[in-house]
Image (tube, rainbow, N blue to C red; front, side, top):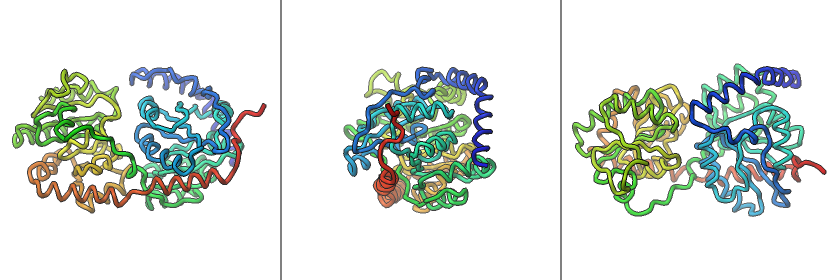
Length: 438
């Protein structure tokens, strides 16, 4: 029965290949992406030398958020096993760009399309001893071909929201056999672990969220220097709106106008989640009566000032930008997207506000609310009122700041636990089964 399901799946994707190709090209064109990685997506990745005694592990991180998990995990793996070779695949261009910044990664490439021949080609050229999928992206042929090669596959920092669970449940006939092939799941928390178990995944345990261990950027200079760097010299207070999505700008614009009546030198730094939609965000802010300036267009890094609205137009800067915030808004939460990561702000002691849609970070959001490091609003109309106490009352802000930083510190250690789990999975088999035999 399992083999029949795979045959039907492959028949569907091969028959649908022309439509998939058109969708991929149109999607890349509309988002300003290049097709330079097509060879890798077809399985023609760079051929790597044998891994040697240390072995080789293939980490897969879909985009920037998952790459952040890899950035925290790689040092722990290499500390425990210095000879280990680590390769890292991504799906998005921005993810690949960030992955290239991680020290200790042997090779970065795009994940091949999920066809049997492309996956087999990648295995032959890379020669991994095991595969670790970060958070959740289970591709049937990747899993089946790994099983045929004797390669253990595990999920680390496993995330499975209620929405995703419903989707997997509807397609249980396809994903149940796939999940059974996992060597184990190191979930972010007990709620995620419970959902994986309900789908029949083996070896599931709650290791904790590695995003608590993500390395904080090194700040160069004082807070004032940082504010100047982001074009907000002299601004006070400062709101950082991180990873905003289409549909949120109108509400954010209204909140900025309302707060400007109280704070003449209010500074705002807005980081759209997807840079190809930067012009759309900029236009929406202008329609709302604001005059945003792109960070890259600030003539002098010491320029800018109070009252300025800055659009952060470069990836990889938000984690540092949060440090100059008085308070933060977490994007993707006012619309049914599932929210973005609030830990990046909380590690700096920046209290956060988010909307009702935090499904992707439900446990994190709940804990942060419990320690009073966050406030949830039900709609955009509540943004200004939720931010006001932290912007105007130093004592309330300091209390929330302390709670947020203590909460982050208390939840660290998942990277070490996960590295031990992953090395145990690799040690469950020897050699480099994926290597092409001469």
